[in-house]
Length: 486
Ligand SMILES: NC(=O)C1=CN([C@@H]2O[C@H](COP(=O)(O)OP(=O)(O)OC[C@H]3O[C@@H](n4cnc5c(N)ncnc54)[C@H](OP(=O)(O)O)[C@@H]3O)[C@@H](O)[C@H]2O)[C@@H](O)CC1
Ligand SMILES: Nc1ncnc2c1ncn2[C@@H]1O[C@H](COP(=O)(O)OP(=O)(O)O)[C@@H](O)[C@H]1O
Ligand SMILES: [K+]
View (cartoon, rainbow, N blue to C red):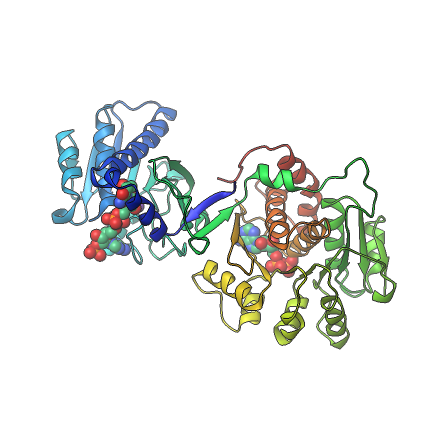
């Protein structure tokens, strides 16, 4: 089962369905226990609990209550806790009583030398950026990588919208985020701001949540299991032949990268059509490359667009491809053409995957992606009745029914020219192998991100370096190495 992420509303519905467990404070006790356990683990890792120092930043709601109860539990382990109350009159009364009874002290500002700071400003009830008092406390902290305290966010980093993942300015940047029962949308949509996300079981049932409240994330093991591999009775045709249309004689790079990625990611056969056929074969001799579409031979899916140009010939070819009943991936120049000619996909019944970056997305819809990327990608997939993969650090793949798969690349080394061409080749190969557009897109994004991280190991890369690591990235997911990015 993919990892589920839910909206704040769906989380609240599940909490209320827990009835007495919510009313008698059991949920909060479990939540704060999970926060305390996370801090203890961190303190033990760095020398033990006794005599260590933890600071709290406490807001007006239950998020602050979690932090106060957690601190009371930490004090029982010999941890010294101090708290800044942002709204002293409204701090969670029972939590504050427990905090004080455990020896915790309320202070006007956080002292230097803290080991951990707990962000209990706001959780799923938060709106907008950190307000000035909270912003000042966090602005004064020395970052963890410069010897400052580790920041542990309770539920979500304050200032990050739990539903859209929008990172307001200012917002807390957490090293660790501890959440309860189920992950929130922001934990994927704003993954880099959340640090390592730790999920604590508090005994709520979230299985009935609606799809519109849900964002899914495949596990590496799931990607590994769905990766197409040849069976005993397979030959080069039976696994699905992918056709790549990309690049040009003048600009062969996209052709070489996209077709090379298809060759690397999938077994079977890759065909290529375009004026860069000779360049493609010189780099990847196994590609069956021709100059004209009429000579292409049969394929089970097309990947069309990177560097193909936007002239009348390109438009005519794109129209021909989209008029087939084969699965088609459209990227880059193909998307620019499609933005002016949406009718080319309007009546398509066959699987269709569009892979825009933010700029191409704006061309397709006539509006910027905006701060709600999830809502935006869902809207385009629904309106155009196609699957849409929105690129970026967090890749989102929405199908027309509203199901969305997300992938946090875990690093941003893939933000380099030509990396999208590699993604096109990988996803095109998976489409030809029979994966749905959504699974093809999401699985390709995972392997692409892994390949980028493998290639980079801390230094910049080009798209060809990324391509060279795709094979080992496939090996990693097939070996079920476990969740890697967070
Ligand atoms: N219910 C349960 O079973 C469980 C709940 N749990 C916990 O409760 C949390 C939800 O608690 P919640 O609903 O009290 O809201 P919460 O996130 O504390 O924030 C609301 C308060 O913040 C304020 N505020 C808003 N924006 C702000 C800003 N930008 N900057 C500063 N302040 C701002 C706003 O006040 P305002 O000043 O706007 O009137 C309001 O009072 C949840 O995330 C989890 O941690 C767990 O224990 C598990 C069980
Ligand atoms: N900040 C980022 N972090 C991680 N991956 C990124 C980031 N920005 C872009 N990417 C990925 O890199 C690739 C870039 O694709 P694209 O923008 O089409 O580039 P190009 O057209 O030059 O090939 C996509 O797979 C995208 O998801
Ligand atoms: K918080």
